[in-house]
Length: 548
Ligand SMILES: Nc1ncnc2c1ncn2[C@@H]1O[C@H](COP(=O)(O)OP(=O)(O)O)[C@@H](O)[C@H]1O
Ligand SMILES: C=C(OP(=O)(O)O)C(=O)O
Ligand SMILES: [Ca+2]
Ligand SMILES: [Mn+2]
View (spheres, rainbow, N blue to C red):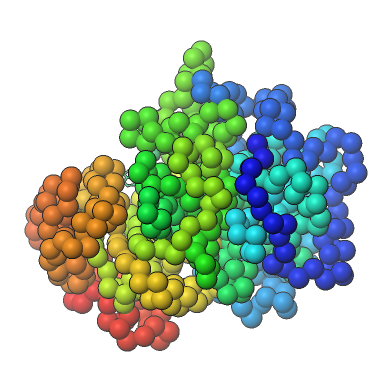
């Protein structure tokens, strides 16, 4: 499955100094053992997963059905960044990034190495993060499960035979010993799950969770540090491109629609989750997509449904014992059911996954209170205000302990993955949007007509119609009205969307008194949250918030 387009052998973005390379090379893994499988075939990984990993099957469509065990979503409270002198002054220590000592990291590392070296089989996948050869990282994934190796085969950029032969030392190594727990008595551990990143040693160690998403979001976290340091902007967004080459970005926290809305039959897919905006355009970090499968149907999401076939990894779904037909409505294992597939499984994927400078910046929010408009056109100050605020919901199952939509402010629409302070990403975004005259939109893919429990989630077909209207130019020249308090501009009409849906006041099914109370509640939450950024933001950005 090697890609056929030419790519120059990349200069790595890490400067390789001999001493550090020696220590990385000596990462403790026994690479000489005969039972080590490096970049092995999809078929072989299927066979091993079926043979050795309980709870593995093949679906009627040919996908590998796997179980990630107890953890079926990310564990943000168990994430650590090593506090060391080469990065400590850069890192945004606090709400997301918790310090781990170098010593405690070595204990976790040794635990993972001992576990991996004592397995009967070991899998290594060497691949790339980043489609632009100038910025790409060489990533090595060492793991004990064929499932995890196939997952990263799908999610990283698969090297050609030639590239694999000349791979050399990786820039970053992920040791996934997820089936083995962390030791709770190691200083800094608060549970037996641990996901830790060490930028100096260029290593990530996973213990006590087999949720595969930790690896792909781990790579994103690494890029979210290294890319801004290299002067380019990493983005928690999907991206696609129209026939005339116009690129759109869709920012959004997990479950808000990045993957779903970027798979658009009329546009070429650049990527569904992680990108970088450089001086020449946008490139995807990944070689695959990771779609949510809950309530998936061929009718509503044909591209994603069709991507679930031989080679795809389908996690934590329930299927019929006889027919092996998956029941996508079944939430009994988790609401966060998932499928990982190579990007070329989407019919109109753009290969290589590199697009032009974005023309439209779409911020996806999933408002569980039902008071944000389905679409608003943002001024540049409003775009910055909403990007820094990142108001949305955590969706059920995406994180450990989240069972229903939970209103949250997730800076840059991806707070769990930020390494630097949010204003650093926001400043770069503002500068790039200004330079390339990008238009900005806020789209609520969440509740309408009432809050979660009373109203309904906005129909996917309406969100798609809104996005079509952005891309056709219809919305740029539409007639607008101002939504009070939030000061958002909402279109009076959008083709394919009932007019009353567009204004939360007319969509509201409960009393107007209840509506006003909810609007005020949300406005207060915004103001309270923005307090922490007040002194770093410019006056116009502060003024772009709600006014009570
Ligand atoms: N109006 C809507 N817009 C986008 N997604 C919706 C909408 N209504 C329901 N959904 C569902 O919500 C989920 C969005 O998840 P996904 O696209 O994977 O988000 P992300 O990629 O941002 O994590 C999908 O399961 C999709 O079917
Ligand atoms: C993989 C994840 O990301 P997303 O839902 O944004 O695709 C995740 O949040 O665990
Ligand atoms: Ca879906
Ligand atoms: Mn996604």
